[in-house]
Image (cartoon, rainbow, N blue to C red; front, side, top):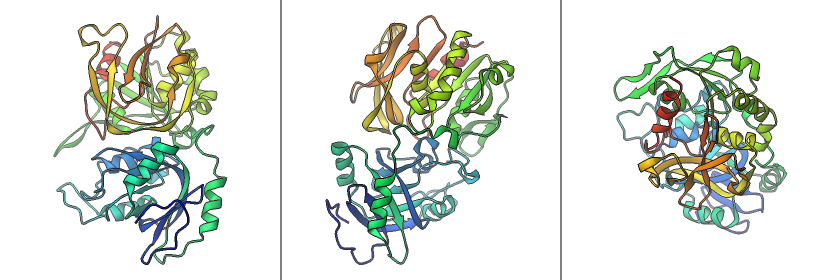
Length: 396
């Protein structure tokens, strides 16, 4: 159904809507859970991996517009989940898609995507001109909105507009505390292979302590694949609690929300780890807070980067013959490190070829580095697995 700049009459058969804070109403056909949820509307350009996207805690308080038209066509299964959302871990509140969800056609499917969305408590909206919505986000930025689904088609539009307008938005919001584990645990899962599922972790050394700011499980699997034993600790773990575990290195995970807000409690701990010369590797939110700990600042992006086709180039010193190499990466972030604020003690190591934004840093004189993108993929290309090998290999 067409995107309107006003409040059009409700079309016949419309059982769902997306209501933007400026009053725009986008009608469609609802699926998944019923009800209404507020969040920031973003778009993701990946052609595969919708289930991984919908269970990534980095999407907490966001409504994902998929630019690929056919979402749900391969169903859902128990293996393509990036967080234990059944246990209350937040992730995307809903999604907007072009085509109606069809019967699944994949040998790995265990249930329909629509049924999985109901069980996950997520709201879906189909029949939307997602190209028009994506162009709007690119032009005007990511809006706050409410996504709603009622099988009877009953909606209080003024109330939904009011709810979208009252929501404070992601800037200044700490969401890591809401999606993090509440207690430490030893990670058990290994790398996935077709037919065998997930393997078991087997290493005892080196030992990586991973701070969970809203992590994707595939990150831990790749640390294990690279040869590490992994212990996952809550986002608010103290320096003393981390060091009691005798880490050979510390990993800073991805996560949702404003890095400056989460950094109020996380950055002091990261600085203590840097002062103790503990090797550190950060991804996404972890990368951003590592940069803040080193003296840089972060900024809210106009539209963000979300997809599995983002080109990133290696820059700076230390890459040897591979300097200038381009990796195709998976990304999911609405904030970025402001490269203009990087101090002399920090070297930029990767940049986006889409818009030139910072995608990697290394702290001079320290065994600490981070990247803005997701080298663990899931979904996405696996060009960047070398970063796990670089980190874990340097701990031996």
